[in-house]
Image (tube, rainbow over the protein chains, first blue to last red):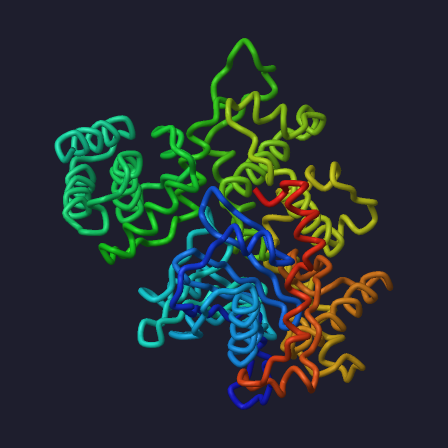
Length: 161
Length: 349
């Protein structure tokens, strides 16, 4: 790939993980009984609730902590989290939507070329780590950004952080 | 716990016949790891694996070829758990672990083969000279490395498949009828499941190279007959690889209808959509009898991927602070009748 070539790369956000707190205790049995699209995991003490629009999955603990995954943008994550909080309010809980924070964003990008992973790892130590016995991709950590890249030989790159 | 662990590390080093310097390094890593706060509260099982991880790291740093599979079998440990402890150790102690040398792995792996001495339970034609087999296996592994068959893959199945092909090619008349499974049984090694796929890929590459060798063009090669000519193919592999995959490069350099231009030997440039359009074109070229580009196998034969729908205009207009109507929320709540039915079924308990 020439340095002067002008190739546009599509970076697609595939998942945004956010958390918020309801500032009240949540009765998981009541949520499992009266909520639709709910899976009650009694053994681990949590409830999974899925929303259709936006398409997110919320993990709800009785302490009031809620983690939402599956959104494709930060705004969508916030909207989904608020809808979920509103659903819990409708179920009768004294929910206050607080401490909302986006904790992780996963994006995918495809390079227009293949990558020779052993050589890439050799040239990018110590940031790059490649263990073919464990995973087919190179794990490249950027400490300053607290981001982790998984680089595959096909040129596909996933970024999390 | 510390003394027991140190003793375990030393025993492991003795079993692996490591030199004294490796043992000392492994013990020092173990002591450092146990003193690190991240490993104070881990389970006893993980602390036992920690010793194995320290030995593994030491072997890699001293270019002593040791695979995770070997050390897991010695410790009777699950590979997933071992992998987790190993990655934590590497991160917390900030250890620099060099990559596993494939050449050293080939030598070590072949050392475990029991084909180099006559035995009663294997035919005499199966016995081979170690040096010859090692040299040819190394060439096949190098070929695999140059043709995108090694990168991103577990190394042991590739070495096993390469050793099998090398062994067959040294006495094809007596060995072509022997399948991979029987070869592994005769050699006294396990057959890793991906080895069949690696073998198929290697044979595919050899067949492409054979089509470029002048004195083989008149013959109709298949996966059995190509093994007989492996010596010639490996001897001229640089030239043959360039010829076998250069015709597609010439096609790409001419103006084509594919979107964008790719660099030689790579799929057309652009995002995922362009790549999807490019690969059917690559397959179409192959169907027309032209050789395809030298690509990693997962790119040459991509699996069907579910594409997420492109964000619509309404989705991109979301700000996160829109008002939420009651009717939106009602769909996520059960009606009183549904609650009664659910209670009756006791499905919610």
